[in-house]
Length: 200
Image (tube, rainbow, N blue to C red):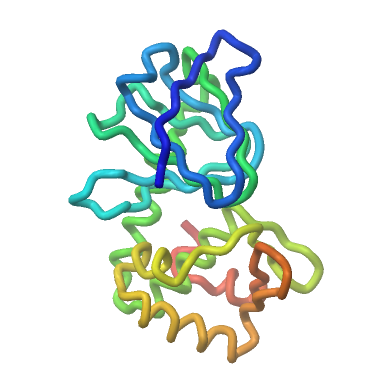
């Protein structure tokens, strides 16, 4: 259940810290002080709280990414901590490169949704997540968080049952490992490198 947050960019104490799994609703009516938030630590999922879209994922954010909140819909937007998360408000977006991470992620997720099969879409999603948010660590690529099979189904346009079946195939092929007692995933580099849309 998300809670509403007011972000005050004038105070050093304005940073908001969220534990894993916590969700905050950024209500545009409460955000008159800031036009964006900046992720300082951790990774987050950004999604739409509108009932009609059923929590549709718009983007993933990592340290340094900014989320424009001066252009939110009237329902606001939700930020979910995938890892321990710290973010703060800012009066104006920084950076001169003109890259909006939400727009970029939304475009990539849309491209994935248009691949022909659920298997291709899952492969492309895993590759994208690791390339953008993971890192190579020895013989594996590490992704520092896990997504539920229901969330993966939402991202690839299929059911939770289908997502579970496809993930089981990848695990049986020893291309994906879920280490016990850890919060992340390990994926084989060949899975990441061979993902559809990997060159884009």
